[in-house]
Length: 446
Ligand code: GLN
Image (cartoon, rainbow, N blue to C red; front, side, top):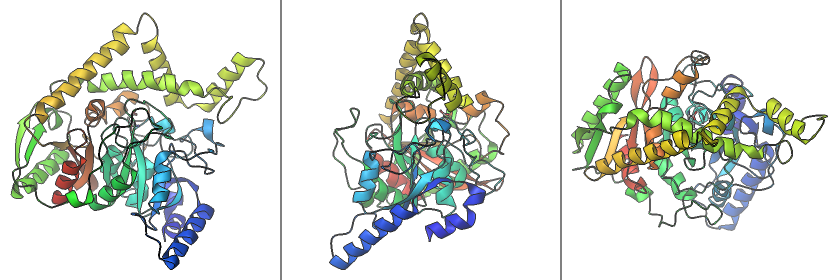
């Protein structure tokens, strides 16, 4: 059914970059045999899943939305891809994204921009735009995305689906093509909160292959969905409902808070005073890490190689000039500059210090409150092309998701209404490794 829906509509939505028809048919056959033999079924038995194209899949093309990797077929699986297989999910294809996950509208994909299923003239958000659009359009039962500064939550919000960014370290990053290693996390995009809990259950857990993987016990996320939130203490940062946030978006959040109040929760306004520095801090740190991570794309080890270079330097130079798109080059240059001697202290080191202050803002609020709630993004989806020539405006779309990434804490975006005919997302932020509460609140609201 998923393949049929994809065939019917994906020429318009362009969520998929690669389809895995052969592999999926094989997996489905193996599952049939499992049924016949009566062997135990996995948690996600038979569910068609789409995987963001920066998660490597053995033998299945993985492009990261980049010309650089347009012919790259990995020889191994990311840990999450193995976990999906162990849970008996069926990978049906690889999903379109902003090149190397840099972007918030999917327009930086070097193949084609994904379109928002609610209105094809609008962007689906990014960078996991394909992952969000595929779920919204019924082109997968659920998908995996990655979130560095908002890339799961913001497209989930724009496409009216549920997107969860787990605590940094909860889900293995092994086999996720690194953008900014201290921020990247893989997480599920689903139609509802219960599905999100099931997928998280299947993909979370310690992995010796990821040095930042956390050794924590994995609770039962599904049984946490009790529907009960009486006495829950909610903090609403004034910075998240102030200037720059669309009036209709704010109204949807206020209405949602009233619903939560009706369920017995209490909310109060608080302050996260360093919010205004988050975007600048993020773009310095993320670009610095990206400039270092992307050094591996030299035309020798992965992907395309320039033709007829005169010498080794020319090989590097030509391969990178041809392989990377404009946004990726912009960030590599920014990051290289911030890391260079003489500027390191003024930019990179300073940004690290501000990151600590931002994290402390969250720690302080979490001393008294169970969750923090606000909009996922200041506006609903915008028109394709409308912010393309203005990267700085584009960067501001992530102002409400970036602080959460810098603090490393978990957050979910759940649909909470419409503004001008497009979906609005509410962001529920929790304490580190307290996905249970985040999911419980989201589920009670839904
Ligand atoms: N839009 C943000 C950026 O361009 C976030 C991307 C992400 O989370 N991968 O960096």
